[in-house]
Image (cartoon, rainbow, N blue to C red; front, top):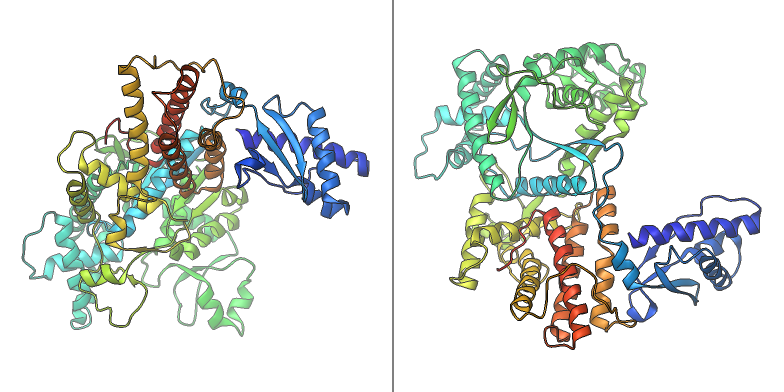
Length: 631
């Protein structure tokens, strides 16, 4: 890890300088180590002297020169650096010894002595219809985080939460019981997609259907009637279809957690008893929320809520149990998180579900292999920020501040439709908005399976019949990359034309770069100009060609990128890295002769190609994309 090594060396030298100037050592203010924008400025650069200049009120160039001398005295970061220089207005630039780097870097990240166990919950689609592209964004973000955390040495347990007691499933059950819809549907979930939209349109005209929904909700929670069995069978069938959909995108799970299991195993009963002992949890006796059990926001007392600001207090307090006794989603989520951290004595029973995934199951066995996490990560869109904050607050109120601090909400922007995509689905776009929200209740959205089929067709038309990776795998990789490459906070305005592009910053581009390197190495082996040895070439150019230099520098960023993306829970950083790495390799491939170069240059360039292939292969694995020898 070049940046990590350099930051450590710079930090040590800055501390020594502070001791000389101020008579004591301490950690310096935050500074950066990063590649400069121009290759001629060196391989890496730091602004540490300019940061220090503000504190010491000294000229930054003078401090930069002093820092450069100190770094030389301290051994230039274990010999990794061959040259360090101070340049105006106060940067310190580094030039690497690339042969030394090649000897020491690229090792697998060592597992920590005591690896963290992390539960990552993602996907968690309501089991009432087929998945759409918004659900798919959640799943690919979550799955990539799982791969990233495992790559950096963590033990990761993957949960998919199944809300089989919620309004959405109840709506679908009501729709199945009353709809007259007919027509060809490829899957049960597709039929339920239409039934769900139909019943939500009918509620306004037929109030009796809403009463039916309440009846279904009670039946689902009691779990003892024919109606509850209908709900369970509907949910189970749809979940099996959803798992098959996700499998096509390389997404897998360790445990399906059914919301009904939380209730039946007494998790909420145990959590309710614990919450009753806190001041934050109470039953409302008057006003709009009379009869409800609520959790008060942090820092607000019961007297304040019941005083003159009662209405505001009632609005701020989060309802966990409604006046009719039905639990809210958040109530069950609090109980679930107490279990995730191993804070409940109760446990689930488990059974096999489909393939290697396990499920909570009333008739299963209690093995005790799940849960008890050191850290919990929930991938849920930004609209769920408040319920997630309530769960965290509940842990604090119950006296578990450490666990609350280790509960992370990975928030992301939702997927909406571009005007062109919305028009294709029959949405009225005459109001000229920049994007249009998907709505399951209105039946507006692009199903994940339909998008995969469409992308597969585009790829088939572009490349025709050829050997190599199957078109479906390329299509899944392209969609997955498209949904990953945006910053998490970005609302993805989904456009079918843009999503099916095969050039630019796309999944197909990075797959092609990898396949190009594989083809080059295979041809070199056939020509007997490359033995395929992993050993370093005998000669490293002292001054690499610009295209070689740019590729080397991008390769050197890999381990630091991995650690930063894992620490910041930011999978899009891996996409950015992979795209830039592919671009550097394609420039190197186009600019320089490789198989036909002189012997020393050929050996070095083939080694550089192998190193690119290895690193890009690791990036593709983290992103959940295939590494094709041929495309």
